[in-house]
Amino acid sequence: MPTITERLAPLLAQLGKRTLVMGILNATPDSFYDGGRYTTLEAALARAEQMLAEGADILDIGGESTRPGSDPVPEDEELRRVVPLIEAIHIRHPNAILSVDTTKSRVAELALQAGACIVNDISGMTFDPHMPAVVARAGALVVLMHIKGTPKTMQQNPTYHDVVAEVRATLESHTRRALQAGIPREHIWIDPGIGFGKTVAHNLKLLRGLPQLKALGYPVLVGTSRKSFIGHLLGGLPPEERLEGTLATLALAVAWGADVVRVHDVQAAVRAVTIADALCRT
Ligand code: HH2
Image (tube, rainbow, N blue to C red; front, side, top):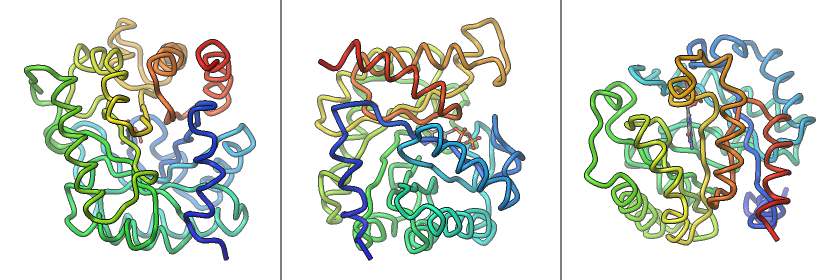
């Protein structure tokens, strides 16, 4: 059985050469776009296979919606939603790189045992004090995202003096804690957390400021897929009508230094970043 480090190596070798695409699979009843679509194992498995066929480099499996105003899901329920699904995908596709989107260390631990290699933690490992040790012990990769507050409260008038500098400083401190816990540098990615305690203007500044986040020296993941700032900029379009806006953000995110994009629409995103890569990565 290859270790997690060995399983991640071919993926990490691609960083910088092309943009990696992380496909979103929410096994939740209430996610803002795909909620309720993949709540049975059969439906979720079929979606996973479709995204792999469309060229997803990573599948990010979540069992808790973190949309603005949402409440946490009890640990038992989150485990029930994600662990059997990760196990089922891993058995059928042992080479697929699976990520678990969670802030709970117990969920991360069991997901890693079931076949995940990546922990995508929207709190940057701040909501659960045991998370750094769990990631380090498993040899997993961690995505450290920036959030201001909690999903419940984050959109209640978020304010920053200098959003890019503040997000950068917080992410730097998250990376320091990860290193101190024994997570190797090569297993740390950072993410500005588009939409997590940010106004439309903050999101735009953060996207334009990606080069300043890149300067921290870690791969940068960007998640804009169908988010509300795109709907706002297009005069109030609902999530179902935000694909073109999403693709525009992906192309520019690549130009500004994104290494990984987290998306609902894998085929469209692979096509968009292939063109952006041809233009930007020489
Ligand atoms: N966005 C969402 C969830 N997890 N993780 C990272 N690293 N970056 C993101 O931008 C990010 C994330 C929100 O999107 P989604 O999963 O589609 O919605 P919900 O939270 O409602 O399940």
